[in-house]
Length: 193
Figure 1 (cartoon, rainbow, N blue to C red):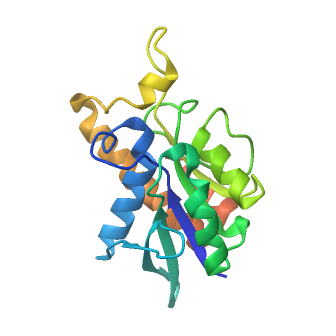
Figure 2 (cartoon, one colour; figure 1 turned 135 degrees about the horizontal axis):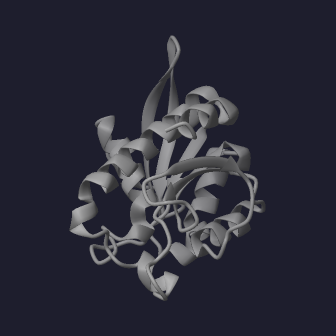
């Protein structure tokens, strides 16, 4: 069974550098670091690329995808994509922004709730379960009484550029560790960062 890594985000330049798109930023960095490019999958409409991750003495093909829909309906394209390639929900790794984790931190888990994250909700509905792996990319809570919905749709401040770059790099490393070593071993490494 192939592994499918999904970067959550909204399409278009208006959302490209927002906090809500950090999952898509990690997916892009992963794809481009292997010298690959996305193509539009004709049956699902999602953007997909195949990277070959070294796993010991061999390499393993891994699908990396982004929906071309708004995040709230991510499942409309990712669900059919997973079905087309025969990817079981437990072999799906979702890269997403997380308000409840301090900015710059990365955490891994399998399953759990959606915490008001509509992209996760849509994906859970499409896959028929919440039991998929997650790379949770900490964006922190909004300051003061700012509405979280407004906060996630704002770009990262330019002063945070270096920290955002580190977060994206750590997200790529975490996803690769999940594929190579499995959840528990990857957590032991990532949660120590």
